[in-house]
Amino acid sequence: MPVPITVIAELEARPEFGAELSFALAPLIAATLQEAGCLRYQLHQSLDTPHGWMLHEEWVSEEALNAHQQTPHFIAFVAQTRGWFARSQVRRYHFA
Image (tube, rainbow, N blue to C red; front, side):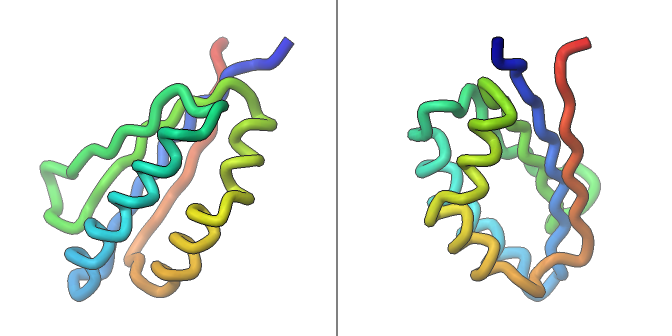
């Protein structure tokens, strides 16, 4: 039986790329929400920094998350935003 996976991705853009990153996230989110294994893909703006975001993701399984990371829209986002981050951290969780 598949185990749902939760991902928390904290993203902080270098100041000169803040606006660009915000615009680049929109098509990624729209496409990701259409994926069969995606249960949630919500963007949250940081209250502490204008260039910080958090993506709260929920996937039906590890396999669905892995499939997401191979989609053209995810690969394009990673390529487009390379070098834009001051900091990023991705943590994965499952129900305890």
